[in-house]
Image (tube, rainbow, N blue to C red; front, top):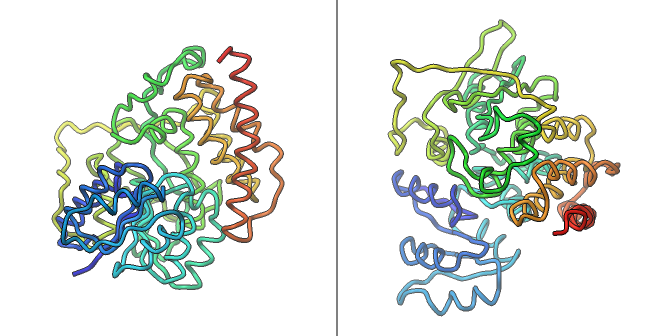
Length: 387
């Protein structure tokens, strides 16, 4: 019986990963959460993992006292505890479904330990792609992407020796694909959280609406598939049926299609690319209509900013994702407006001239520096708005 460690087990991807793992007959040997003590407790009582990690040490102590009798799960906390959850259990596969760079150290440790990585966290490659990919090559660790688009590209490239002419990265367009720039300037967080296709967490839903999420996926695809910016084309595909496609030298394109359900790419990774019956439904083909359009970079400038960061290199992408974390939080809190998210991101990373970070520790320090700059910019914007 294969076993998996799920970092971020209480989030949207993490909870679905548990159901997929159980359906596959896998053991969940380690789990982790940031804040959701109650759900993590339920998961411990249900799964009886070897290790469970909660970010806050005081909450972890409380959790240890609450778990059911006879359960021998080791409760850990903090970064050290997360690393232990990643490499200290019997798991052969580590699914990273956390947000931000919180699990970066644990991911790096799992790669060094030659674990198979099911990667559902794009910030890891956006902020530390050179480190992660170099370590994976050194250790022989296999990284199987779980983002639906990158899983699709990965599947399309099977048997191709990695040679391609173009990656066609699809995008639903979010809830605002038909709004004018003037209308976009007036939207609020409630509107931005109404995604037309996918059910996701708040942060990624806002990023989807600004196309910042797609920008990060462009950077992630570049690292995963050794693709220069000019070979990655974003297409607006509102139906979310073609999850991405790859075009080859002979002009032939191979697309991966399916219902918009994250359990599909999760299963592909956990089953280590085997095709087995799962929890997803099948497409209804009669009457199926598919459309594709180019994104409007003037209305959605965050996507253009991501391409700029990819071309620039160094730590600009790290500064971009660091700033965006705080900008989205400020937008959700009502402190800044919709287009202020772009302004915060652009102003934070405009001076970023540092070369690729050399270590995970340097990534963390650079992230702190970028967030300090972003906070100052947010405070200034909020002050002007009287917020």
